[in-house]
Length: 498
Image 1 (spheres, helix red, strand yellow):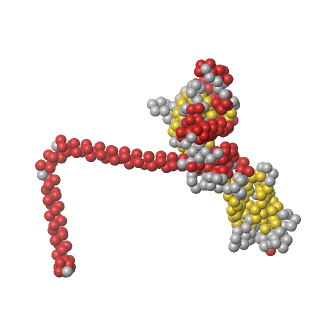
Image 2 (cartoon, rainbow, N blue to C red; image 1 turned 135 degrees about the vertical axis):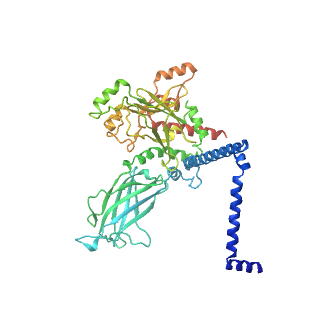
Image 3 (tube, rainbow, N blue to C red; image 1 turned 90 degrees about the horizontal axis):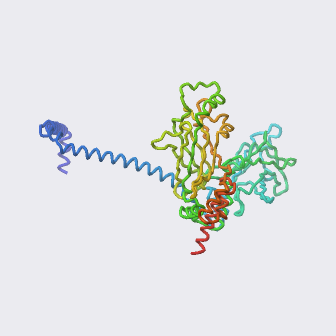
């Protein structure tokens, strides 16, 4: 306590501040004199000091590289984390194949119905909302059967004037949203058998697909629709078919469902996929090859004259592309296609996309994926101010027999049909806004003459799935079905042996 009291007295009298100031100035003089000594100056320039500087510099470089590597690693892991397949997710009901298949696409068996009641009716203001009767949603399935749900929320007076109501409906476990073809809103009587009158401004039905709301149906009414005893129902226009991703998932759903029905929970592992690829003569099925061929010199003048019109290109000698391109590959795996990977198209030490040249890029699929997990491919041209005239772009797999099995192709003819010109150039097309979509629906096959050559050389016979994969004219999605049927056949066989 005495010590604390003395300190207080020193601070109060100003002596403490003076002591600190004096000692601080004394310390500064000692430090300045140390740096002014000849011994210090000789040491700074000596050999040991230079070694120390070199070591510190190396440590700084290593630290910077470690930080950069850590950031790259983190971003890579963040991208690959979505590849944890929902088929191995313990949170869904494995005993229900419909729910399991929907879970693979990031969705459930729930749909949402949203309706908005009109705010007023000039002729009958008391009949805008609905106080008598109920509204039912009637859905027709592909097999002709119907499902009917009453739209109601507990403790909420729905269909009030100017209100927007949302209803969540749970479909039966044996039914998926892909089975529904028609939607209808119907005015039903109440418990007393009485109808009401209701003005519906708009209505729509949505579904959770890939973590995002996907519109299934909406009204096509030009003005507020009046429900009364004389008008008991209204059709909603299905729009799911207009959604490209919904249509593609619809194609994929049947054989993902088959995977779930057969309880092949590990069917998407890299090892099993590799065995299937190897059995089909596609040992490098996890490597996608992309050829980008530019028009030759003989086509340049024709393109400029016929397609470029009066645009002056005097500053360009050739139709070479000097910018960068990216191939964006979307997968239908976890997160229902929300996952995609960008591949920079750049060959080290080579000037790609030169006039009359073909550039080939080998793109390794993400861990656990194969080329048959692809949903779509888009070519992004990142420099719209440059000029380039592609002749053909194709994506393919290399078979064990040295032949290219094409999965998608875009030619100058299709480019001209889609974009009015096959030349990417400022003023003609905004390539950074409108990417070039590779056509995965095109059909390609290998010539039967190659089959005979292979059979004669290796004394074997190509039949079954391998024959269908190569020598039938299948599009990409049909090849996907064949590939997964082979995966399940191999996995099922291995499961039976154990």
